[in-house]
Image (cartoon, rainbow, N blue to C red; front, side, top):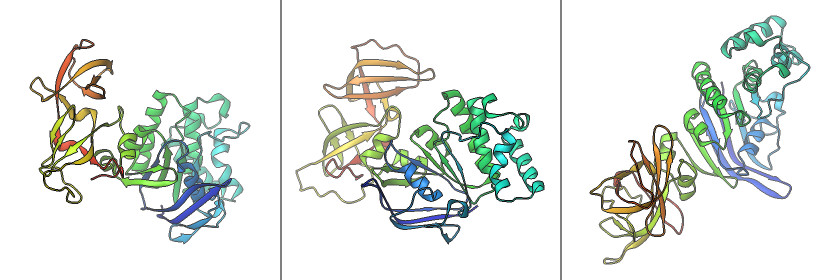
Length: 358
């Protein structure tokens, strides 16, 4: 396994700036997930690491070696594509061994690697089949196996599960996590699916418009988002945002809720003149809003979404709608009023002007 270092990377395609001044360090054995909406530059970054797209500026080091202008074959990487990219006329075994054969790897070594990876991915009964005889999940496992037999320093995954149905995605997600735990290999994984990012990553890189918005553990990115974009992108339902006023005692007030934030650790002292208040945006996740008959806030039920082991309750607060996750089975009448409280220890504060965390 290898580490990876990217410094000041810039890429322009067709006159459009895709990546600008991007810095990123990936440690050996890390499972790093690049997460963001379509068009944010995450796949372009992955392809640049693989050597499939040239950089206009900056550098890419893999295992301490400058690989900025190296051919893909020289980079010691294995890549798994979204579309499987299997040869239809070759068996599973031939597909997996193709790269090794053209590179001149001895037959005995090829057989050893194929046997090892086939056992790991439960592909032994399928080795003599051709792709047409495989399910979507089996084809993706073959594509993963083809990358693994290279025993590369870094493995790259470009949205490998996006073509699969929900059940298969869940199953292969578990297999990938177990695979990483067993191999302890360096893996970089691109996805727009936050569930994949949260469950697979040791660290998440959230991207928007070619720039990194935040890097951190899944817990840190989810619980302490750096800005409004990250806060709103992660979570389903998304974080609730309420604009209001904050005073010197860190009491938040708005037309619909009042919350004491006395224990909130601000990054910098509030620049508030005595007697005045600062306009802020409070962010609170649906699971941190609790129904409470004695709560100091209330809303009217506009929608109830049963989700099996919980339900999502949508409340109208007089022009603003928020979502609340309810874990205990309850009956709610549309239009009825419920009282609630916000857990002041689990909120995020943002400056609505800069959109940055306070």
